[in-house]
Length: 444
Image (cartoon, rainbow, N blue to C red; front, top):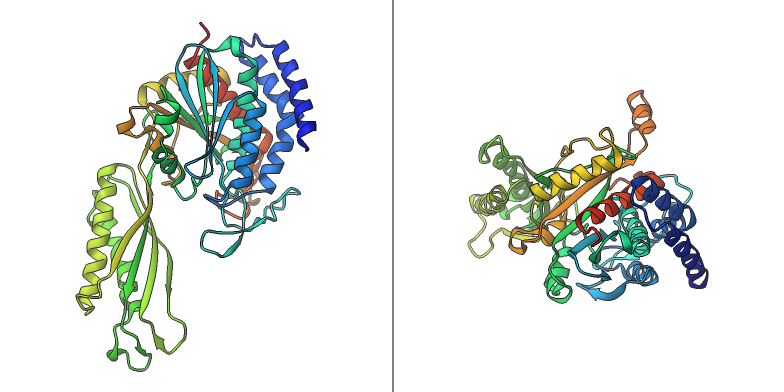
């Protein structure tokens, strides 16, 4: 859609929304959200889905989001923390509320079978070219943000305060939120009174909203282990030090940390996702590289896991005869703390969600694994900002029923088969965001 067409459509929609600006009940808000999806957001979602970009390289996505937020009447600042975008919507006295959406895709070749599937490729920061896909639903998040901004801008008689729309890069590398904070997000735009975000969830039925009143997501740390070796002929292993063997011992020993060093009631995960070494059958390499993801549900266990991984890896290297000047090296390259919902705020807004969507559509939140979120940086304890992060159902109930009866399994996040129901996901997320704002920032 060209921008002249977009502007004309936006004006028409804005007039229609202003005509129903007294949206005191959720039914009128729901109708307006559905109308905006039909008239505008549907096409925008397809655009984002077909044009994903890798973490910290989301230049086109960021530019489009900046234009969309400007079109909704916001003051927009670009290049915050890299490719991040901040849009400010002012409406008199009241709280400052941060609304966040992440925008990066993943280096995955889409095989969903959708007629609007991504065929995009992009050169990553490592210089390699990858297929790119929105395999985690961030296209839902940014489309919903546009819908939220458009509608709230048209109904200023229903709320009072300032909204900070944060379009965040690099959530998949758990680095974008930290980068925006280090670029002075709160110093430049104000410290929020509340921070809110959501994630579409393929494990939840469409139309549902779910949030914890405590821990929402685990911590995540990316750990790199470099195992040096002394190269030799494969027929003469005694002449060298084999990093493949040493690395294999490290992989096995790491699991003893979970089973024998962490208290059984404290969840933790150490997964070795990558192990690379060597070039040929009969050559003992001089190096092996391991990549780990490490998860925990509290900061004490997180610190314990990281410290113990280093102790075990370095100790095994020494036990297998690596010289003191060739130690195993352990590096934490990326990480994010545990994501906690502020209990008081979560209890309040969970009540708002029940009023908006009904009891059956707001089930209690249950962790479906140890997924992580760098939204934690916006609401870390040292910021003093209470946060509310919720999940929005993305899979039609019929798909769960089909899977239970022997049909295809519901694809997980990060799968090349990943797909969600865009209309239901976007409109539910938008309605939930609007409901939260109307409750936290009522009109004077």
